[in-house]
Structure formats: structure tokens, C-alpha cells
Image (cartoon, rainbow, N blue to C red; front, side, top):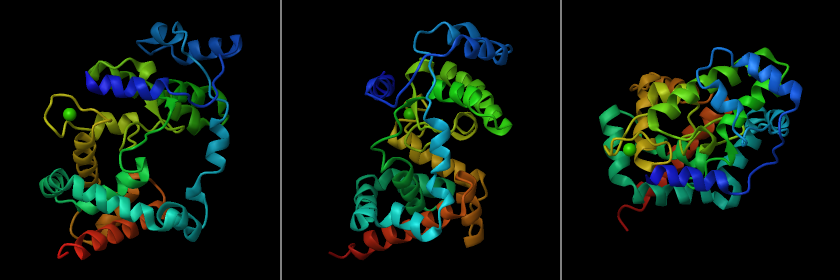
Length: 264
Ligand SMILES: [Ca+2]
């Protein structure tokens, strides 16, 4: 299965520093996983580990910086490379993007922009092991919301893996536990991720599946005809005004680039 191989290859590449759990952490995790069906499978796997760098990552998240800084980071770095790459990604995947956009009534340039920011147009999707990311959230944070996020998403993640026959330790994610080119967290994978190319598998590392799933997600989040509905739907994808504003701007720049060159 191609999608397994891609996930495995990505997970095997040298990733961030990881350490084994202490005895105390093992005991705590065992208690926290009391009602999780696959508890033993998780605890007994030698790949179980903690990423000590995760709490620090949240402190430096660019979403918390002023918009100008964020915009420059996301859009302008490399002399508008993100726009040029977006236009070339659009041309390359035009048929799927336009079909998905039409089916869900969603702007296909916005789908392109989201893929551009989330995974540099389907070229990378994080090098953490998703399962260990959720375990790290459960054990490293004092904040209850982050701890609960770890446990809730771990449960959702196990459901997703079972459904798709993935080895839970072989699925890569970001430090926050977002998976695949569209960077869906497990609850969103279970709720909105679909099989776009019709090969029978909803694969977060398939371009077509991500394109259709982002369209599906935006539609479900209320994408309609008004600019206000677009803002709301993109904001649902990532609860940040910076993110939403940058996405709208990037989508427009890609649209101008693609449409401006139509007559050439
Ligand atoms: Ca598929």
C-alpha cells in the first residue's frame, strides 16, 4: 500500500529528539489510558517516547506575532516563492482542484493556499511520530486543556489508524499532532477527511484526498458566497486571525498569478 510506505519513510527519517518515558511517566500514562482499548499495544511498543521540545514550540508559534511579521514569514519569504510555487501547484493539479472546488462550492485557490502553508504544497508534513506527540502532550503539559487535547486526540487517532489499517507508531505529524498535507488533527480526520480519488482509502498523504477533504472541511465550516463566510470557514481550519488573513491574501496572489498568465 503506497500510503503506508510514504508514512513509514517519513517517520523513519531522522526526526526531533526523543527520550524514553521515566518509570513515573509510564505509571501515569497507564492510568490516563485506562479506558483506551489499545492501551497495552501503546505501552508495550519500544517506539513509545517523549518529545521534550514540544512545550517550547508553542511559545514561539508565529500565530502569536503581529500580522506583518506573520505575513512576511508565510508569504514573502524567498521573494514571493510561496506565490510562484502556489501558481505552479495550481496548474499542475488544476483538474482536481477545480473539480473539488465545484463539488463543494469552495474557492480552489483557497484550497491551494491552505496546502501551501500547511505543507509547502504537499512537500512535507512534519517529522514527529503522531502517537508520541499526543503522549507528550498528556505528560509534559501542566495546562489541563493541552493534556486533555493529548488524550482526546490520541483516542481519535487510534480510531483513525484502525479504520485505515495504519501502524499508529508509523504515522508522522507536526509537533501539534496535525497529520498529512492538509494538517488535519485526528478528530478532523475522523470528521471530515474523505477519499477524494476514489481508490477506497482516505489517505492524509494523498494530494487528491487532501484537496477534496479541505474543500469538504471548508464547506462544513460554513463556506458560502459572502467574504464573511469565507473568513469564518478558514478561521475554523486554524483559530487564528493572522492565519486567516494570510490565507486570503495568499489565495488572491496565487489567483492573480494564474489568471494573469492565462493569455501568455
Ligand atoms: Ca484516496
